[in-house]
Structures are given as structure tokens and as C-alpha cells.
Amino acid sequence: MTDTTQTAVLPAEAPAAPARGYWGGVWARLRRDPVTLVCGAVLGLLVLSALFAPYIGLHDPYQGSMVSRLKPIGTEGHILGTDELGRDMLARLIYGGRLTLFLGITPVVAAFVIGTTLGLIAGYVGGWANTVIMRTVDVFFAFPSVLLAIAISGALGAGIVNSLVSLTIVFIPPITRVAESVTASVRQLDYVDAARASGAGDFTIVRVHVLGNVMGPIFVYATSLTSVCMIIAAGLSFLGLGVKPPEPEWGLMLNTLRTAIYINPWVAALPGMMIFVTSLCLNLMSDGLRSAMNVRQ
Amino acid sequence: MSALVDIRDLTVRFGGGGRSVHAVNGVSLSVEKGEVLALLGESGSGKSVTLKSILQLLPPKRTKIGGSIRFDGRDVLALKGRALSDFRGGEVSMIFQDPALALDPVYTVGAQIAETVMRHESITREAAMSRALEMLQKVRIPSPERRLKNYPHEMSGGMRQRAMIALALSCNPKLLLADEPTTALDATVQMQVLLLLRNLQREMGMSVIFVTHDIGVAVEIADRVAVMYAGTIVETGTIAEIMKDPRHPYTRGLLAANLHGAVKGARLDAIPGAPPTLEEPPSFCPFAPRCPQARPECRAALPPVVEPGPGRRVACVLEAAPA
Image (cartoon, rainbow over all chains, first blue to last red; front, side):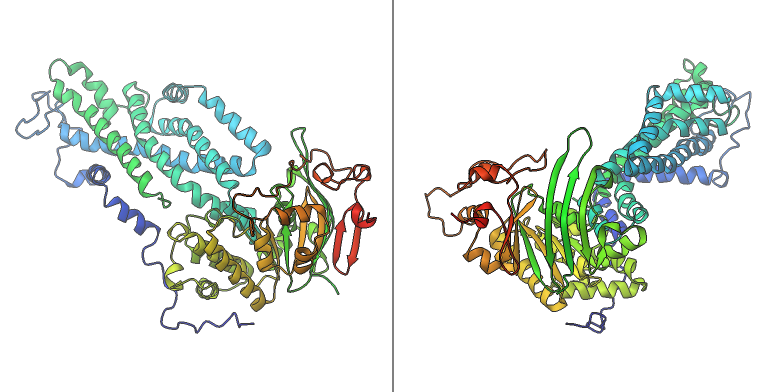
């Protein structure tokens, strides 16, 4: 019999924190993926400029000028031209990023938290809990997401908070469904049995082994939803159900500049370009993250 | 002598959906302290189910368990909640067939061992990690300090099974349940893992129930063998008794079907037919349809259990009334 409590085997090499942990590995894989890096950089730039918009010497995004309306791109003092009320487009696009990104990300984060919880319960508990949760979710799936968002926003009335609520409701079902299916498949894997065989209770199994394994796929899926969410949010504003003028927001700007499409098409297309570039970068980045976060390759 | 594990008349039935399967039908066996028992049988004979019912790992909603399992004098099937969690991993732990699936892929090996240790003993994470390191040294994983920080996918199959063994033994269990732990491994690695298990078993003085379908593996590791067929134990005895003097026709068939010593080109003596489906509990000897020595009375009732010697049991009419 050996003394199992002796620890003086290797005094010099006390167990330290892992040299290259999980995130170290993710970063190492990301570094070899230029597309993801470029998209991440573009998004980072957008987020930073939106955050620090008041401090980077832009024009006032609300200050119009009747004499300089719809100036083309490249005008002196207004690099990206002006909108239909003579407001500086660059300033409005950057300020607009604040609201647009906020409306794109917040509902997904909220839906991520709620949907993951629901999906974990449905997938792990199974039985009647699964039936109640998943059938309710199915009801929401009967409507196209844009239609659902419009319907809920319409019922609640226009406004930023209401569009956040409606977008959150729209994104809970898909996330719940992904979380449920991943949980159900993880639940019957050997390592869950192994954890149970080594004395883990249900709570520990869900918290450590199930959550640890389903988090990655759900997170990646949620990232890809962000771009959809941003587009729907912009759509709501475009329809007058989201942000109200004169707030700068890309969807709303697209709407108000719509009338100028024959006079100054390039300026009118700019908010659309921003939406396009941002959602493209989000999609490409979520693809890159998907492969980088997969430890089992 | 009081046995560490005493299983009496264990029956396991999986139900639900109108169809039920009688996976285990009246299994009785006991394991002494420090003894290695091999449960030998083909796929679907109820070996793993018997093993899992000791830890209550079968899905409770769809499973009906009868009979009794006593561990150290306590009724295992009555354990619940906290007591059950302490029992699992603390006193009895289990290793699985495929270590690639039995280790959680998103945590390092060290973290998983430490987590198990911390669950059963109130010690700090540092102490648990140093225990994990010690366990990896014990299962002879090379450069254990580095392996501690490895994810399961960064290890080879044999190394993963060693890590799994380290995890299972980290809390000094009295009984180790091994569910075909060498099946998924290469033949050479198989041997290493078997020797390791045997050494650790002697060193730590624990009992082992080792499930396998490979009689060669059973010979290598076990003191005693229980041969299972269709959810029943057809023969029990020491490894020498079973090898030299198999009494039950099924055991003889198994030994004859072995690859060792087979002549190239000659057909193997396979047992004809297939095991029963077990949708009904057996009302007569389940092996009778395939048995070369079957008699009319075999199909009339369940065979009697005869004890030709101490610790030796055979369930066969031939044994009761030799021709």
C-alpha cells in the first residue's frame, strides 16, 4: 500500500495554472485565419468608433444645414457628404453605429441567456418539461422572424425598449432549439455517465459537463444571429417601429434617405453599406470562431 | 466470510413504448474484498446492465430493478441523493469502454480528476491538483506534469484509458467496476492496461468487477469468472476451474470458439444460432435452443443451480443429473 497523501514527489514542479489554456488554444488557431482576423478588426473599429464617437472630432449628428443638403461624397468638410437635412453623413453613420449595434447585440445576449436556460432544462430534464418548452417554442416558429418582430413591435408600439423586447422574443426560440438539441445529445454521452458514476449530482453535471460542452455551439450560433438581429432591427426602424427620428440609426437613415436615391444615390446607399459590411463581418467571424473554438479537431 | 458486494436475484427490465426487454434475469453473485471477478459473456447478455445497476446508472424512468444489491452490508438500491453521490466515486467507481467518450472533451485531464477529488473530500483546488498529479504518476503516464494540462483529445487511446483509471481511483474506492476497459484499445496497449489494473488492484487492495467478452482478457486479470448468458449467470468458478473443467455447455462453446490455438484454414467452432431476444423473461433454459446437449427437460423449466464445489455454481440440468 502506498501513502496516497504524500505530495513531495516533485517539489520543484508544483501544479501551476495551464500554460496554454482553452482560450490560448483558441487564439493560436485564430491567428492562422486572416479572414476572421480582418472581420474582427473591422468590427472592432466600428465598435470603438461608436463608443468614442463624441471624442473624435466629428460634426454634430443632429445639426442640419439647409444650404448644404445632400452634398455628394468627398465634399469639403463632409467627407461622406450630407443627408437630406444637411447633416454630416460620417458623423451620423458613426453615431448610428451606436444604436444599431446596441439593437443588434442586446436582444441576442438576452435571448442567449434565456434560450440557453430553457434549452438546458428541456434537453436535460426531458419528459413533460421538454414537451411544454419545445411545443411552446414551436408555436413561435410558425411565424417568419421578421413578421413576428413586426407583429410584437406593432402591438407594443414604437420605441427602442419595445423593439428590444420584440427582438428578444424573436430570438429565444431558435436558441432554445439549438440548446435543446445539443443538450439532448450531450446528455447521453459516456462522460455524463462517467461524471455521474464519480458522484456528480444533476446540478453539477448540468453546470460543468453539459454547459461546458453546449456553450460553444450555442455561442457561435448566437454570433451568427447578431447580424440577422441587426438587419431586423434596422428593418423595424425603417418601417417606423423602432427608433424615431432624428436619432441616427442605420435602418432609419436608409428610410429617410430613400427619397434622395435619384438625386444622390451613393450617399443614400451608405447606411445600407454599413449594415451589409457589419453583418458580413459578423457572419464570417462567427464561422471563424466556430472552427477556432472547437477543441476536438 | 462477508462479501464486499452481494447481489441477490437481480432482475432488470427496460420498459416503455409497449415493448419491454428483460435484460437481467435473476443474477446472484458476490465479490470478496480484494478479489477480481470477471463477468464474461457476449453482447447483450446483461453484463454492463448488471454493472450499471450497482451504481444506479440506468435511466430510472424506464427501468424496473428487482432483487437486492448489498455493498458492505448496505442496501445499494435504496441509496438516494447525497448518500448516493458519496457512494458513487467514493466507494465504488467505474471505468468505461471508450475513454475517448468517457472523458469530458472541454476540460483538461487534471481539472477533471481534481473536480472528482474535490467532490468527495473537502480540500483546496491546489491539493486536489497535486492529488491528480500523483494519480497520473500512479497510472504511469509519462511526464505527468504536462499531461495534467492536456485535453483528452491531445492524448493517445491508451493514455486516455490510464487517465480514466486515474480519475476512477482518485478517491480510493473499495470497488472498481470496469466495463470492457480494453476493448477500444490496441492489442499491445490492452495488455499494458490490464497489467496496470492488476498491479493497482493489488497495491490498493480493492475489489474489481471486470466485464469482458474476451476470455483471454478474463484469464489475464480475474481470480474468478462468472459466465453470463441471456441475463443469467450460467456458471461461476475460479479462473482455473473454468478453463480446465468447464461444466456448462455454453462455457464449453465459448472456450471452443476461442481464436487461440485455432489452425489456419480450419473453421472455428462457433456456437450455432443467436441469443434470445429477451422480450419475455425466460421460462426455461435460455441456452437450450443452441445447446448441443439439450434434452426435453431443458425446455420444461429453468435449470437448477448446482454447486459442485465451494464457490462453484453451474445452472444446467446435465449437472444435476449426469447422463
